[in-house]
Image 1 (tube, helix red, strand yellow):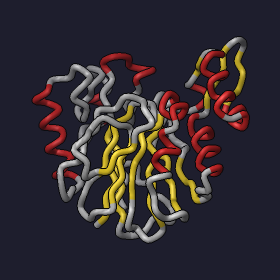
Image 2 (tube, helix red, strand yellow):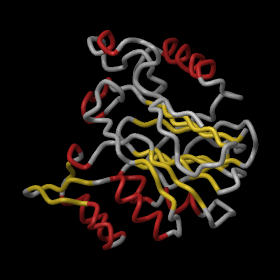
Image 3 (cartoon, helix red, strand yellow):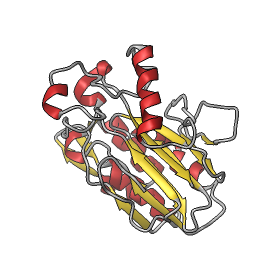
Image 4 (tube, helix red, strand yellow):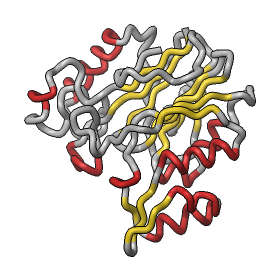
Length: 246
């Protein structure tokens, strides 16, 4: 397994490969900090970056991480849709596969990427779990597509609680979904700080997923490593989160 942040998902099978990219590929940090918000390794076509630059970055991604195939890129809409990688559809917020060499992918810039594998490494997937997707049930719909009950989950980099302030309307939607999700919030005046990692843990554990690792990065605060929409606005690029079976 390979993560650009050098953190391996504990317990994942050896035949499952995992990658989370950063906002730069191989440029010294001091150089990229002076650049525009896209830096040099944005992998999203939908953020008004130069399309030829993004195509170059995607080609570099395949080479740098020795990907067996072009990733299945999704059109993400903060939905609860989980797609089979073999599907011709591309509108969704999670993708799974049982086929070797098929690369599942999501793009993020604050939202939580969740890598999932069964204990045998015969079925894997990755979820784009922003607060809207969590409310819409993207975690539940993805877990429901796994045929094995013994699953492993790993959280890629997302925004941390102290950087993620939301309104009372969002808080009320979460506790309406499940009162236990109250534990993922800290109240700050008339606002709330959301721990998206904790919200996902609560949901996953309710679904029977006990092996959950990761969840200690902050895309907003770690400017030297990650894109962040909340920090950089519309010129924020996107990281890619990839999983496949060898």
